[in-house]
Image 1 (cartoon, helix red, strand yellow):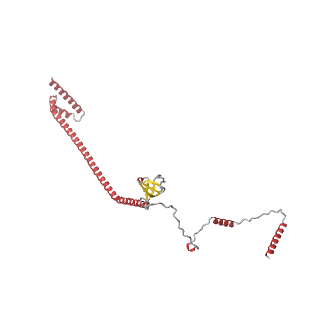
Image 2 (image 1 turned 60 degrees about the vertical axis):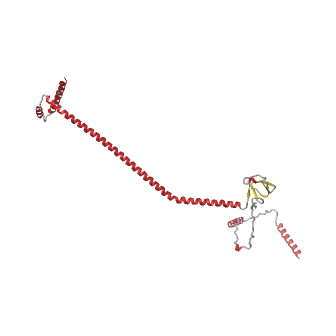
Image 3 (image 1 turned 30 degrees about the vertical axis):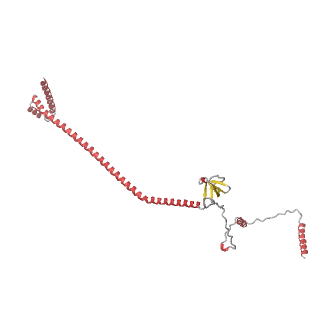
Length: 292
């Protein structure tokens, strides 16, 4: 039955194909008309494509997980470092230079000992005397101890610096006070010096004033002495003038009378000038007589 059913189905398909071919002439062009999607569909398709290309995965919470992960313990990627525990046979030596058929930093185990030599792996020997220069002992925990010691030294150094800083900060107000007191003292000293200098200047000015006053007093004394000398000279000249008047032709009474007559007039001045000239000539004549 199934075979007959299959054959009938094939015949029906062939009949449909023949009918389709019989209805065509062979000149038709198969045109596939594609409808363009709307703007909303384009936007949705772009969003879907973007989300599929760049998915954002969120972690599933622990209480919603259906299966748990396997606890994996990863081994250390660092290779095991060879370290020793003793300085001697069974210990480890590290090369500090490229020598002893070893690279710099290469470590080997000490297997035996000879006179002045250490026998190491690879049938090599290392001289004992070159410890610290060509090679060194590698002891387990020594590097950690050195690091710890360096850290402790750094901490101690930092603590000392902090203590010094705090001490300096504590000393700052005291230093400021000392500076202030020193400045005040200097200012006072300067004021004292300035006062002394001003006093000295005042004393000098007073001394100058006194010297000027003394000079003035000396000048006044000289002027007084000159005046006294002039007065003495006048007093000494008065008797001479009297003598001259006696030798003159007019007497004192006549002169007084004549002067009284000439008072209030301009001729009095002329008269006096004439009398002076007469007296001068008379005195010169007497002097000439005395000389002769």
